[in-house]
Structure formats: C-alpha cells, structure tokens
Image (cartoon, rainbow, N blue to C red):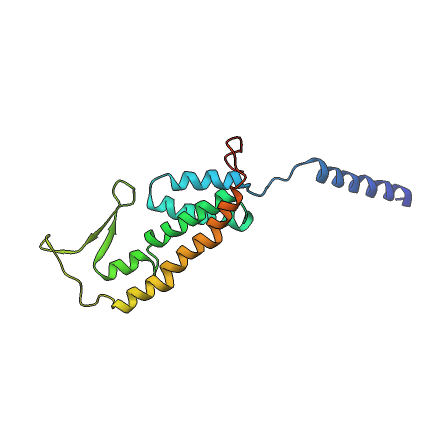
Length: 174
C-alpha cells in the first residue's frame, strides 16, 4: 500500500475517533448534588432504619464530591447522628445499650423501640456483665461528643454560611 494511502487511512481513522470523542456524550456521568440529595432524601424519608443508614452513606459520598453544598452538609450532620444511634456496629449506641440488656426492635419509624429485657415481663435488672460507668463516660466523650462536634463544625457551619444568601427564589438544591 502506498505511503499516501496509509496516511489518508490513518488520518480518517483518527479523525473519526476524535469526532466520536467530541460529539458523543460520556455514557457515565458524575452524580450531581441534586441527584445525591434526591436519593438520600428518598432513603431518609423511607422511615426505616436501613433507609436512614443508607442515607448516611449517600450523604457521606455526596460530601466527598460536594463538600461545600449546604443541603448535603445539613443532611450529613443529621444522618451522622442517626447512624450512631441506630447502627448495630460495635461502639455505637445500640451496641452499648445491648450490653445493659436494652435491645432495639423494629425497623420502621412506627415499630422502632428500645426495650429492656424484663424479668417475668415486669422488672428490669441491669446485667452483672453491664459496662462500667467509665465505659459509658468513654462512649460519651470519645464517640458521641465527637460526632456532635463534627456535625456542628464540619457540616452545620458550612450549611449556615452557604444558606446566608438564600432567598425564597433560590433553587431547593442550591
């Protein structure tokens, strides 16, 4: 094949590829802040424990992509505390309460409850294996207080400063 014909074929091929890259939109796009918010709101307002936990994960991912969005920050502050109170993870509130014989029951807002193990259905006795006061103090100081501080310092400060210019004409999602 003559050199000139090869140059034309290569030029045509690269021109076609370049045209495809420029004219065809990307098949995968980054999730936008409003999409994250809509997804997270759907999960949060499903009124289930799993929905609240999924909403936290959604808003944590959204915060990684949009750290200055006031709506995302507000929801992350709220769901961080919900996760701490509702998750079964070691070191969370549900785990601590279970060591005192208080179990979480129900998975929906209507059925959610924290119920003590009652003796004869009437009397509550703290188990001998219950954590010490120091364990409770450590949970409050090392887990609960930092979660509250993070919600205020990292998220609500951003929310309040981001909403300072907000008016009724502003779009719901910034």
